[in-house]
Length: 278
Image 1 (cartoon, rainbow, N blue to C red):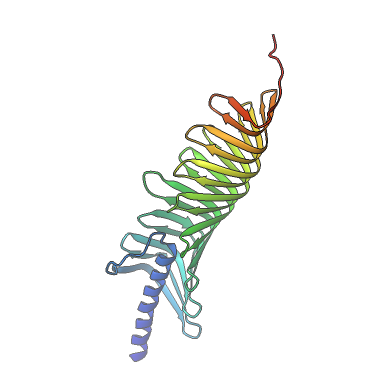
Image 2: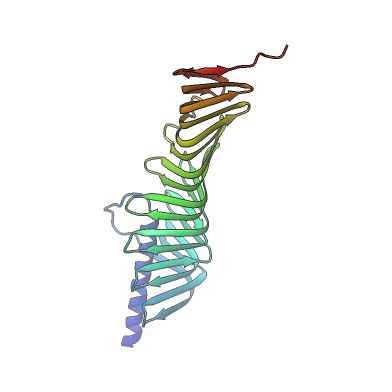
């Protein structure tokens, strides 16, 4: 009887620890001083416990962990009490008041305050101005409150989207930093660069390294660019070069009005033009 009661108590403690671990690792908002909400764990059809290594394994269709507005679901959940590692697998979904997310596998390192989602990761932030993030792998850094997406990463907002090898996104600051083969697509044109900082609140893209801007017959090249999406304008600097059809202009700074197809060059501009055909 004592053995059964001890195992039952340890099972309850494990579930509470597990649920709190997953919620803490996935949450992106600040902690509050409110009273703890009731924890509800359902859906487990089989539970296995290895007492020698302190590993709990829960299986269900799926195992569901609820706490207030937070809901985590996974067909398989493994909790290593010794190493403080939680692994939810076989198709994981998570939702709270701020975002919804899905992935093939989610691993949480409790001591490090870090979580990694892998295999077709999708994250959608709720709200009047939603942001969608997709990647092969997403790492959550709890202390920094930021996400790092890698592997064909894509961040979409409205009619604009950024793809890159890696995208770091801070939702509180409304800021994304993309690196590696970056491509930004907007209704006014495309922007390619080695690195792009997207300031979502002001709808600005700050690009560096092998910058290429294109729209229709307009193509601009530079080392640095500031793309102001609200105005439909981009300012190129650092060996700036713009092709407008067959015509070409070089200058220290070139501003392109992508909607009007108008170019303004300052700083020793050099123009090569061709007369219009009669």
